[in-house]
Image 1 (cartoon, rainbow, N blue to C red):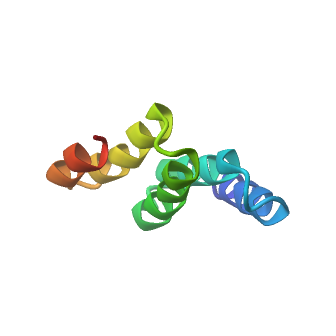
Image 2 (image 1 turned 180 degrees about the vertical axis):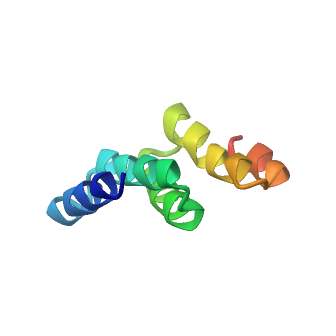
Length: 77
């Protein structure tokens, strides 16, 4: 899955203003278990979109999957 992270990172470099590139980077990092990278990328997607539900849900999931249940509840609201 490291290939997916590299591809998503390249997409962010091509167009840093594209929220979906940040979203894809966050999901790829999440699937690799790289919680900090996933949180950072998904946080960018949340901020860029004004908090669309899909970005919020996956941002919260990064906390839940890493055992930070209270942060997951708070971040997904």
